[in-house]
Length: 176
Length: 422
Ligand SMILES: Cc1cc2nc3c(=O)[nH]c(=O)nc-3n(C[C@H](O)[C@H](O)[C@H](O)COP(=O)(O)O)c2cc1C
Ligand code: SF4
Ligand code: FES
Image (cartoon, rainbow over all chains, first blue to last red; front, side):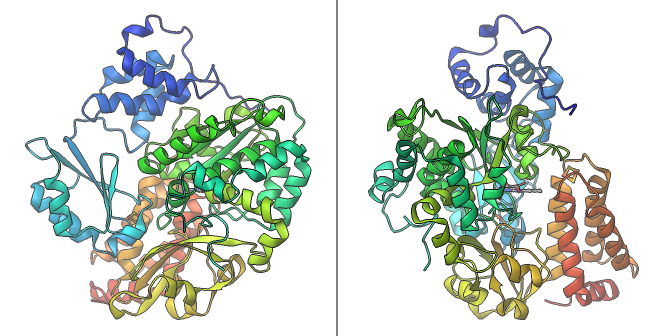
């Protein structure tokens, strides 16, 4: 058949993996590695990048991606490809709170334009940007699979649905 | 007749707990199979008899898909669940994960037994943190109670199940992109053939099914394929989860028998909001061509009825639009989505989705040209059917549907540089 499927691993596994991350982070990444066949350490790349990103204030640097590559015996380019493909990875600094507003159809016809406008004014930041004090980033996202609660946004791991200006005030005022 | 399958436990107070699931006979189908050493063929035949069609969008018969695996080839095989749920308008699998995770786990273990796989993955979209945590907690409970692990109930059958978290990419809902993603790569769809049944995850035979499809399995085997089939109508066996949203009073997820009139579903969802009038319905997620409201009010919710009306049931995501909506704006937003989410491998899709968006955007912003509608017609035929995966078709179909039913709104926009509505 001529189809092959092998990990895009480096010729030589990197040594001193312990020096790459602290023991807590290594334990977390190792939990993911253990889910996959032994030769497929790279299956843990998305989880590892997510953990590393969280530990770095919400974004990835080349240095961090290189470390993930070394830890998983991957070529650095393969890690950059993954980090730039998926929308939840950030390659530039972001605000402390990333407000991800869905503007897809169900949210749009339920007033997501007004939600975006309200947020832009309240946070003094444009869609796709980070506020001057570094506290908020405002990001437009595609359907988050919560259209029954339109309009909605996500901050951190949490969904907030059926948004109104009053509700937005109380949510944002509750954030540190 | 509602809430018989995936939502059968929705009246419980914390239905996601093992103890509550078991109080309704949960995991008894699985333990029965293991104790009797039921033959895998008879399980697959029961699923075939149920008429269950894949709930992820394509509607492929589940039992038939399982029978493509040659059980006796040595080596690892996999069961993969698709909880990527990214089709705009769809939000049902989130509720299966949040409220009925054990039924999904039981369904996946049974699927593993039926095809001879000892390992499974559930690919959950990265944004679904709460559903992921629920599913993880259920996995722990199931493991502790002996429903996952080695030599289950002394049967000699092993099954381990893990979740894999996505990181934001609609295309990873496409089954082969999803497999690439689990393998730690960009989510770019593979050429088919070979199909996953022969060359799937890590190159091994794999079945991949939607969350709702797999969660339906325990009930089908408990009550019988014929029972399930009889819930629905010809060619559309069973009941199905419908995510209904838009300009309606009580949006949400409803389990109803296939073949239920759309008007009843709309009523369950509280009807139109603020006395507004129905203009159009997108019956199966944003990739499904739009159907005008009056026509939709006469249709039933099953695969054949919606196909006959020129659209598709898809994932059962029903978006209801009222008369205040400008169809040019709605289509512009949908086209932007496909442009944004194209993985970029095939030229017709990568370039075509951008063209579609830019042309619709110029019509929406009052810069449309008289020849633009013919241009759009032409472009859709040059994208659909000429790409590696179905995202190309998914981008073309909504454009074709809108131009078929609401062409005059587009013409008005081009001629008058403003909306026909509002
Ligand atoms: C662009 C694209 C996106 C898709 N997204 C999903 C999805 O989010 N969830 C899903 O179950 N199937 C999705 N599918 C369909 C899958 O490729 C596949 O048909 C399905 O998971 C098979 O399971 P089923 O037979 O149980 O439906 C998508 C297909 C395409 C082409
Ligand atoms: S059709 Fe589009 S999304 Fe699918 S493989 Fe081709 S470029 Fe990628
Ligand atoms: S359209 Fe906003 S969550 Fe689906």
